[in-house]
Length: 305
Image (tube, rainbow, N blue to C red):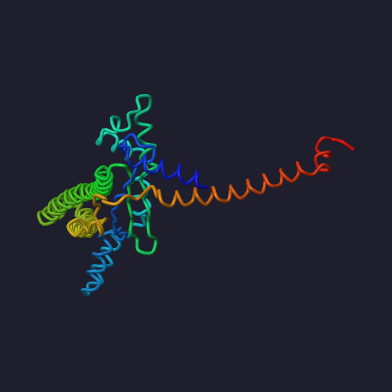
């Protein structure tokens, strides 16, 4: 027991005296950031704002144009931060080839190291996403965590912006097409009315039918045009009132205290384990001694009758 205690204390002190890069048991530091995930899209906030203002009709239109998105952003964020794409981006940005110094498979080694040291945890009750990274260098741990936050914010922002930008472009194209059709129908209606007033011929009845058809098409196109314009206005309102998807609750700091290893706890565990091993060996040796002193037992072991 004493020997085990001396050995484990010696190796603990030795690991502290060695540099972190060469130590077999270096101090490790964990930097952590906490984010609040906004699962409600901006369209939901617009609908709520219009409803609270007494504009239920406008709210129903906004809800029809922008249905609630059922995307689980928390799960998606966790998936992004555990993907090889993110790890490869970190590999390039922080030059991990030089840090981990593996010439045979540097990218694979960095992926493995990042997967082992990064932790992404979601609190289901509060929707708080905690991102932490552990390394022997506290500054490097903080840099990785801060980059993870900026990475997912940029990725999600681009995803939402691209989707709404494409939607706005499609609306502009449809509105322009409907507007051109309305202008064409108005011009055709004006020509028919002019033909009706100039002369009543055998084609007069057909001109009246054509005029009524044009009026019906024109009214339909005007309704469609009005709805598309409303949809575009709500989309612009949606984009302008966009609420950040991630809010930083606790910023990452350079850790000043180590998160591991627990050398004192290990010394206690090794000492206690050595004590029980010593007790077991004592009973074993005592039993062997008694057997050697017993001639009957020794005879049985030697196969004598």
